[in-house]
Length: 273
Length: 265
Ligand SMILES: Nc1ncnc2c1ncn2[C@@H]1O[C@H](COP(=O)(O)OP(=O)(O)O)[C@@H](O)[C@H]1O
Ligand SMILES: [Mg+2]
Image (tube, each protein chain N blue to C red):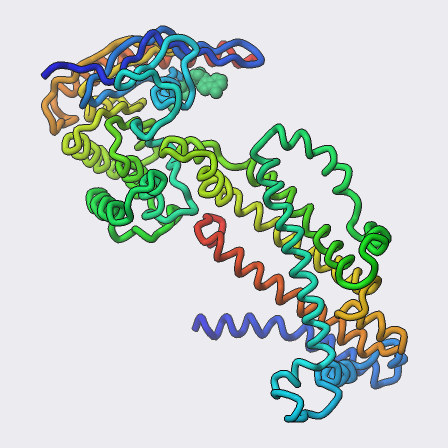
């Protein structure tokens, strides 16, 4: 009974997209819009498949079948983009986390660092593009720089707030049980502020993702962002749309993983039931 | 038995300096607690019970006077004075087992010793089935058992308890009180127990220190001679209860007048 109900409610979510696709297809087939401007969903799907599959037929002398599948343009783009956003995020969050912990825990460090942070924080990472290209040239370095910048501030700000919000009763309990400052940090302050830190991580990776697409459109010549801009030059609107959906799916996949990780790390937290 | 003073509270005063009026939370408190005694600090809310307990624990030092424990002046918290807080200050990100062994791990005790102690405490406090649960999955009574076990793990000679059963329902409360009495007599701890419940104080204590409201002073120091297990329906119990009620009620009234008088700010 319960299974049937959940299946039914899941089916609910199918109707609206199905209707949108059918209407969209019908509108294009009826010739009401120029397919160059808005290609039919069927055309997008076909293009998507071509984008996914390698150009050359499978040749056993060249390597395994798996390697062949992975040589398609879409798979390579996905990988490039994913690698970039991951690397940028790890660098940005990796710098923000210790700084945030220090700024949250020490009023001194906070007072030293805060004015600089407040000046830099409102500058959108995108505004760093000219400087990034000037400093790092083209290719991966400026892109990774921008992504790291995009991830840095959300993680930093949330970590500071998280550390400050740690209930002093945990600190007192820790002291009473003999914890020194290092253990206090590692075993009490960091886990207690984890809910805030992780929501910073989620925002940070989202910002990093946006920076990744923008950077690829400007400074790099591969990856999903580059590909949809390239497709525009050839008026391949079907490929643009296929690329956009690919970007959406990558974003969804990353967010799903982060949210799973979040649920696992916060399995002790009351709010998660 | 020679009554050895284990905790000496020497002319302790505590003033909280605020933006407005200074609050004299404690004024010239002076008494000793001997080893193995079960002492209840009793008084209406706001009379300085927690402040005194925190001074013994070393969380916040007196403005004047000093607290001496085992011959040494208290300057900081330490595992010789285990504290059980009213709000279950369990670490919610640790399982029952991790909470209990936290102090031992800090002390770098040997793993088999830790496990042995853990097993023993889980058994004493009836927590064996819950060792891998997180605090959020436990009832209030269970959480307070874990908090007691966490403190007992370090085997402190002194246990400080700040209204530990205040948030529990009557039945759970009684069973935890009985368990605490058993632990206290088995392990020969000194217990300083804060409560605002007269009945709880009479049920538990060897000695009840009644405190007055602002400034917090010792209003009366009562030795409870009723043999254990005590029965709240017992006439002696009731007589003492009546006597203490009048005293606490008088303080409560002073408290209410004081707060009514200061509603202007
Ligand atoms: N940190 C503080 N700053 C200012 N006043 C405080 C502080 N802690 C306690 N007080 C005041 O000291 C008095 C005693 O408080 P407390 O010891 O918590 O009372 P109790 O535990 O008996 O309810 C109260 O009037 C309270 O308002
Ligand atoms: Mg209190």
